[in-house]
Image (cartoon, rainbow, N blue to C red; front, side):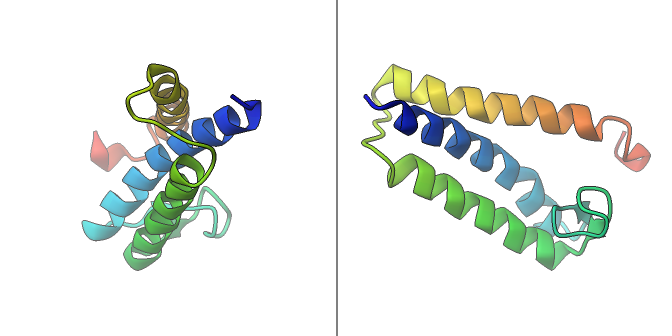
Length: 105
């Protein structure tokens, strides 16, 4: 199994995790920071921008998980690699945004 497949699947899991908060913020009508906001990652993007940003992240996750190598949901190694990317991104996002939105407490 080539290492590049594992790297792609790891980042596929990370993009999948990143898609969730953006898509949810967008469909619930909330502004949320994106990389295209000014300043990037700090400024708030509009709900439609977040929906699009979430869908782009979902598309990237699909490309990395399904179109690279032969990802198999029944192979525990494949799932663990993608799951590690998903979990690490989740922890990083949670740490970054901790306390930044007092109205969400």
